[in-house]
Length: 376
Image (cartoon, rainbow, N blue to C red):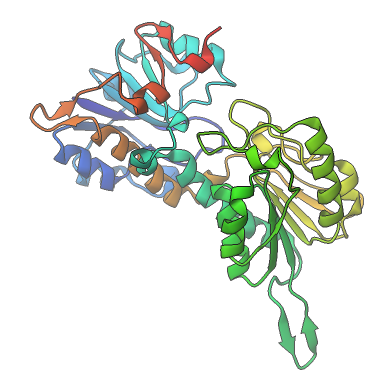
């Protein structure tokens, strides 16, 4: 079976879906691997490195010729589907909720499209979870981006000329990205606090040395889905949460927001009034910018400074800003996923369509959109 790795074409996408490391592993399992020329250039992987690992480096048409599985970071646009063989498997981040028409185009093209961000949060799928691997890097990079725009040091420094107080960092949303942001800010010497609607995250925050800020009521005790994600909260809870956040946020030097709800716009956590209450020089890094932003004043893809001197960072595709590491982790996620269905005797993939992992990630198959969440 042939695996094809295509070059990413989306704006500011610097990652690649396979590395020489995973190419070697795929070949070791009996696969043929073809990589589009220049696919790894943006993250410093040369064509020669892929060739040395055993891959065939060629143009897009040659890569797609006879391919059984196509690996990408982001799913191709509809106008890029020419050359994809009917029946081929596409494994990538597809953003199906926001790209329903594109999912239909995949179905009509005869692709079996697998959305890797739909990976279920079960033990045996942890090593396949692209959301976790990429969010971990995003949380780390968010703190570094905040430091870039914050014109002061983070740790307390005691000098002969006097003491510099530690910066106060507030992390909103304690998922994978939030936890890494807390850990990174603490390592850099900041005073860190964090909030989340899920009470279960309190112990995690405190274990990293942060202070947990929380509206503790009955609704909050049931604010986590069976899959481990945060639920959409009621309007009454949002009012109480906003009051607590408003009081907390005006004391902060840096705010990092990470809250996302699958299939929904990012929850609005930071209002314009809250931003106005912050001191000049404060920084907000909004990791939810691409999904509408957790901050009312965020502009996706931009860094803006408000009239009162608060900088709001809304970078798109933050993992791609650490392209080499992000590619390495994403590529391993894909390898772990495919190898889980590898038939050693046939030296090929034996898909078990009743497997709970495939039921979760398969969006299109046999010419139709089949994922239950996308029906209707």
